[in-house]
Image (cartoon, rainbow, N blue to C red; front, top):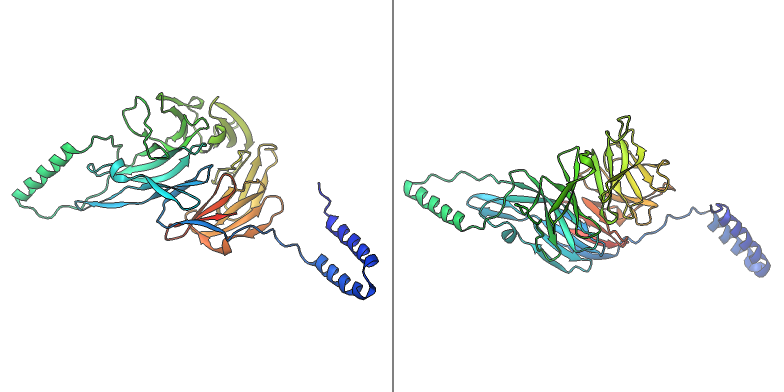
Amino acid sequence: MADVRLPHLYSIAMLRRARRLLPAAFWNIFALFAIGCAVLPTAAPAFAQDRLLTTVPVDVSAFAISQNDRLVYAVPHLKGIRRTIIERDEIWIADFRGKAKPIVLPDKFMPVPPPVSYVVKKLAWSPDGRDIAVSMVMFTPTAEPPPRETEKQLQHRQHREQKEEEHAPKISVPPDGAQVVALFDDDGHEIRVSGSNTRFLEKATDGAWLADGQTVVYLTGIGPYKIARVTPATGKTTILFAGQAFDNVVFDPARNQAFAIGSSLSISGKPQLVRLDLIHEIVEPIAPVPVFQGGLTVSSNGQQVGYYVDGDTIEIHNLANPRVPIRVQTGPGKFEFGHEGDRILFKRGSLGDSGDLIWVGLHDNSWVPILHDLEFHEFALAPDGSAIVVMEPGKGELKVYEY
């Protein structure tokens, strides 16, 4: 451990050396200056917070950052069809220099008819940055009733709609309100599951590609959740961990693992934090969780996992010493781990609200506001620690800052 007296001892040695070398006329001035510097409080560490790399000037509803510093993001798209407003999101990719391209366009992905809406809820890159898992919700839009029609007008409309239906592409449409996962490569080509009768992973959410770039895991159910694993190329699908259900799950796909909390994972029946090996189906207990209030989060290096134990306190476990957690009082908000693992980036405020961003030290209780105390609706850290991506409140624009 470093000696906390070191700066003080260094100052004394510096003064002694200066007393020997400086002429008497300069000694008094130098001594006053040196002593004044010694008693000044140590400034908080400075972090780059003003270097804007690029802006995504559209209304974004969801986004994710790849390991090779690319953004994938969803842009809501509305289209009117015969007094019906259909919502179907576009999906785009951009790099940190601002070069962007669309990879999923609604009219090609889900042609009309049928008039089906879908909303992207979550996007996830594969660890190699080549493929994307898109978690979305499907629903049937409500149409306004047609105006009064004569018998001839009614027959003409019904004939036209029948012709359109006959010539429309035949695509599978999940039921209203269904949660599904769609798979794409980074050029927007759809990745289908071999032998499946549907183009989606149905009754699925939180899809994630594992490290081999060939396997996908996802959650099923509405909580507690089961974990499924599928290989699209072969169509082989498996419900993992003998169908064990978990209250909360966060995937760490780069290491083929996940962390979960469940009340049925211990003999006592009390909530337990566990690590899940998604390949070998091994459950490794980490620590009991007497109280859990959400926010289960894993660090980019897979060595730290944290969650709220109440509305104000985050508890963090390091896998090197999981039985000795760190507790940080932050108040309500959202957090992500910094790349070095010694701090978290915290957005203050209730979930869904905008808030300012603060680096919170895990060992020194330091609080360092960034980005001029401005408020943002959402944020994410690049996995390699190179950038912070923030979403402007109201407009939904993304801004990428170097840090």
